[in-house]
Image (cartoon, rainbow, N blue to C red; front, side):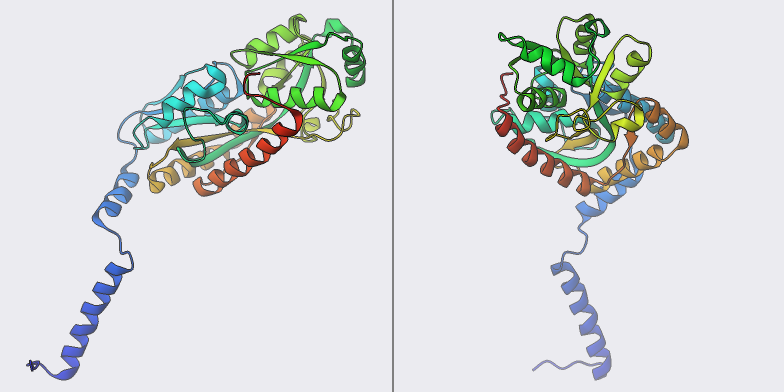
Length: 341
């Protein structure tokens, strides 16, 4: 039997220290890799950061992230780039980000359209709920139903009566298959009970231009794309997708107030990262975004665009996106919305 040469209480104290050290290791004490991740987050960023917008320039997602990117660049004293990769209803840009190295230097500026497309299309080249992780939300915005002033509609009821008088059906447009504008417009046609064909554009600006010219009967557009043109008299707004929209455009009713109940929704805009991107890095980005979104000048700027700044953390936003996709999947099945348009 081996005896300790030191007094019993000294041996006991040493044994306790060793046991605590072993226990801490077994319970998941920070590994060297975890420590390196935390250190990297503290020094972040050490190179340029990219935000990929899966839509054309000029859309709400583009406007919002470019505004935030400017402040991020100033805060980090590093280049923060915004790159548009439009096409296939946002699929091209999202697929590109999903394939990037999860090092915290490439992010997806994700609109709610990302969630809609994920809800209606089971054959995407990525899994929206597994190939991405949350960073944070940026804003939310009601969407506005826009038509050409030349049509002379006084209300949504006028448009519905007109559409029902066209047995061959009418045509509405959107920012693309699976966009939130597609969801809003399809829901209106379904609830109102008129036949309608969908024209998918490359982005919101293109759909709004054709609605303004009367080449399509109507479209839905977020505040940044709808409000300035409406105030100039170039577009007419018949309704908003959410009661919150009435704050930005007094006198314009929500769909329910206009006589078409059963549907209400807001667009949202946030940031996602490739799966595997370290949580400390995502938390650092989210914290800086939250600081920027709280600035009075940023809140004022967003308000003029019909958007409300909304900040959230990585875990919260990831949960929000998951719930949105599952809820929208059920709605899309009810109104017969298909991934092919």
